[in-house]
Image (tube, rainbow, N blue to C red; front, side, top):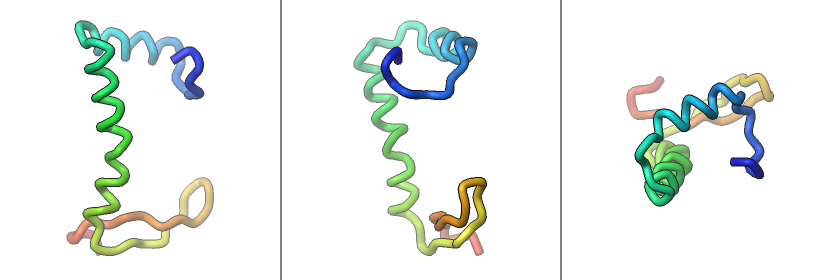
Length: 68
């Protein structure tokens, strides 16, 4: 992660390292790739979108079928 921009503190990086004890590089690659696709999966499952206020301004958010 030395060259990957992030906002993790050294303590958070240490905690992640402890949680990943025993994982191979390939395991971590698969985990990260799977997690990075979750926003796309949520968008695919969305039945509608809402326009919401965020700290960065107004944005559309994917909603589940049960969300008004």
